[in-house]
Amino acid sequence: MASPRFRDTGRFVRRQAPTKSFRPANLADLMRCFDPANKAPTPIRVRGSGSASTDCNDCMSGTVVDTTGLDRIIGIDSYNHTVTVEAGVRLGSLVAALAELELELVGNHDQLQRTVGGAVASPCMGPGIGNNAAFLSTQVVSMKVVTPVGKLMKVSNQQQHLLSAFRLSYGMLGAIYEVTLRVRPSATFSASHRRMTIDTFADVINRLASRNVGLKFYVMPYLDRVYLDLRRYEASAGNSYAPPWKIKDWGESTVLPHVFKSLNRVMPIQSVRYRLMDSIGAATHDLVNTRLVKNGNNNTSAGRKRKPRNRVQSTWCFPASDFSVVIKAYREFCRNTLEDSGYRTDLPAAGFRIGNDTSALLSPSFDEPLIALQVSSTQEKGWEDYVIDFAQFAENWGGTPLFNQSRSMRAEYGHQVYGNRLELFRKIRQQLDPQGRLLNPFLAQYFS
Ligand SMILES: Cc1cc2nc3c(=O)[nH]c(=O)nc-3n(C[C@H](O)[C@H](O)[C@H](O)COP(=O)(O)OP(=O)(O)OC[C@H]3O[C@@H](n4cnc5c(N)ncnc54)[C@H](O)[C@@H]3O)c2cc1C
Image 1 (tube, rainbow, N blue to C red):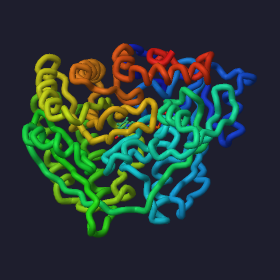
Image 2 (image 1 turned 30 degrees about the horizontal axis):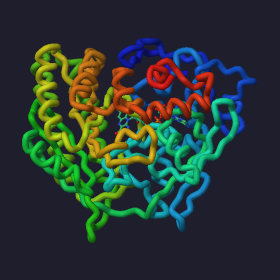
Image 3 (image 1 turned 135 degrees about the vertical axis):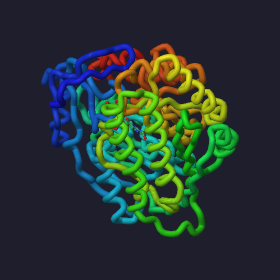
Image 4 (image 1 turned 90 degrees about the vertical axis):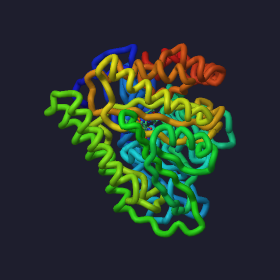
């Protein structure tokens, strides 16, 4: 069992110590966890790799079903371009198995320690190219699910409405046991990088966001700097080599968080510490986000396999059409927050474009393309207040929250944003789980 620690999502602060934890090794075990005859304490929460930033995958008193033992890749159909896996398969294992057959996931998904189940039950997104690359759940063709009362159910794309409710269902309609996903032949894209000021970025972002490009960026608000990474499919993009992407990922996800964590410990003078962090951050990004990678595919650019333990994060999404204004407001927000509270995030914020996607009832980008803005830091002291302020900032700018990644989202605001779709999901949930066996207090705020 994980060592006890504190985590909160704005409203609840509590000790993370579930009364029971199961790690089923096969379907029969999984069904037994949910069978009411076995009297597992409720609520029952399904968990993949546990990397969500909110309490959607956890419960204080009840049962956690850890799906990582369900890790079989059942079959890859290289003719029809589909793959069938158990829900606990890690994205990294799947990406590697597909690469051997020169296939790849549709969309650019990093954090390879995540499970397929977690990544289709909650928004799993990255800088994929094109509109059908928004979420991994978009590619689900069918799934087998263990219902809240332990029965096996198959949902396929012949039941479009039901399948759309099960995609991004955050484990509230049952435990996904097996998933069939569309995949595709590996395709090399070209990646071009630019360094610019926030004002220049604001001038170009609306135009770029409406194009068929993969778009990722890093913002350093205190230096007034953006590193932009644009990805396109070209007729002759050339070869894709994995080592430069590994170095880039190592710089961004390992070197910076480790160095900043140490600086937070050893350098007591805040102004000096922040100046140092900004210059180290800029030097690292100058190195890894300018000329290092030129070509890639969804396998080589997928990033790290380890759980991101060294930082905390909160992500909100904003309409792509307004992002030029939002990014300037974000710069002001960061500067004002630092002045008022003395707190700032030490890592650059990351962002990417998410295409318009109506494949899931709870899709965050159901109505329009969005830009996800992910703030993260190695400094936990002051973080909880910061994410409350950031949630308020996001609300003021029409942000869309994610139930697995947006810290401190207010229930009323969640209802307002997801509106009728949330109501419909709630009705489906009540049909499948009338006793709320799978609903923990965090999710009950929005879905009871
Ligand atoms: C530092 C950091 C950076 C991150 N960066 C990104 C990013 O760039 N892009 C991104 O998309 N996400 C990001 N995330 C969020 C996180 O990786 C996602 O929430 C991820 O999709 C969750 O996968 P998981 O296997 O860890 O699932 P978990 O966190 O364990 O679960 C997530 C949700 O899915 C449900 N679930 C899990 N397995 C099943 C199943 N078998 N059946 C039914 N429901 C299930 C859980 O109940 C829960 O509601 C980041 C998180 C952190 C901490």
